Image (cartoon, rainbow over all chains, first blue to last red; front, side):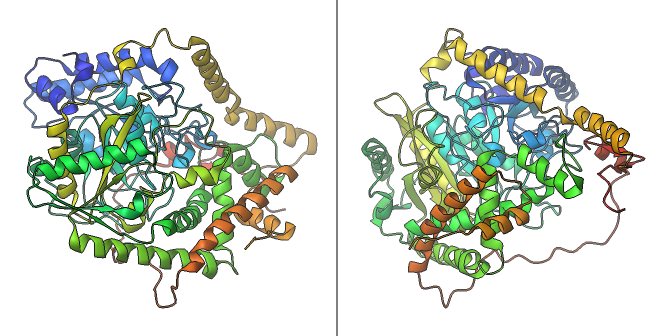
Length: 534
Length: 97
């Protein structure tokens, strides 16, 4: 099998046996990215030289007998809202187009401690706000199963990188389904851990009470191994949880005998595509045949999760994104009037439409006079949703559900009606409100050739149960195939479209080089008006 | 129930959000917020009078540590990202006469 087709753990074993060198592995994926990314646009930044240099470092460490983890030397992609020291981190936003973090996120440090080689940074919806990866300032990412379709979002770039064999695994982040939904659309396995399991230090904040970093890979074994590596108690994240049960790979057993699985009947109503419904029920049947006890039950409150989420997430976003003001990093407008004018201009030009929409809504619901009616009401609803899950998990070990009401929509069909796009998050959003772990596992391909993911949710800290259920299902399903297009090299596909994208990407970068423009501006102002600007 | 956002409100929210919106953008923002609020009003169907707001899923306590500096001087590295810097400080337009 080719290097690119191996799972992360398989590749790690080959590297350990010295069948493949770390540089060879890195080079294979860099070559792959060079071939495919013109079309897919899943990466924002790839620093080839740094990658190869790091690969050699890890190789020397391995040769020197360093005891690194099972993924030592295996390349990885990282979502572009997770800080990487010395590597540009943009959140796919113009406002951070040139930001080079002086430090790495704790999750990245955890990976590097065990010998990870970071290939590059992946495209995403701007500031993780979106469900299609179309709100990126660097152009949309394409779904490798059919490049006319979106990959989902917001971790679209990370999911495409794994699906199209551009990276063996990737980190994503999940605030309302941003790991699970694109994993479902791209036919990869993506896990959102219990809130507090992976440090948020260095994750550029969107909705701090909901954000969580998690793994995206080819199968659940990889996800368990990656999570084992990145989970840590971190004093730098005040919501970090001390856990003693982070040996997630111990749960990789083909045994669901007696496991109680609940299917929420209220997830199977209007709006769910028939093929998705059948796919999920088939997974339930597979687990039942393996000895699980499967039951339907009413979860309740399902329709209240999305409105509560958008109040809370937008409120937190409006506060978190206040730090982008054109002073400390990123984009600064070239012409403005005074300090406040500079803040406003820089933000208005630097943020995209969806981000501004959420900042406005968030500022509104937090403003005096509306705070109680909207913000506190949403937090009270969150408490009720949490209680509904508490009741459900008294009866069930795992909740089985769709990850999304349908498969990946076509490009250009979602952004026109934001509210409709938000409704697509109905099956994933509650897990973030309640802090629950959840995983999306590919289960079949629909009649249009697009993958369908099944979602498994567990109670807080019960990752092992969903890992066990996912593993048992995978054993019955067999190895998941890469998209048919990924077997080919993408070269013949829509070259004109991709050329357009590349041009736009370059243009964006150039037009956004505000640093120099600002300096010119200073000179002009001082010369013409004789004013000091310090 | 149809929510109505006034011109004054959108102006005020724009100030809070530190965003400069064109007239077209203001109209768009008004209708976006109105539409979202109509949808969010669904929450009023729930009786939450006896429910405490839940801001974090787990009890969150202050995390204290000794106030000891553990990192080095990173001023120069931090300023590398600044759109404008002067004399080891961030440079901004003049704010006081």
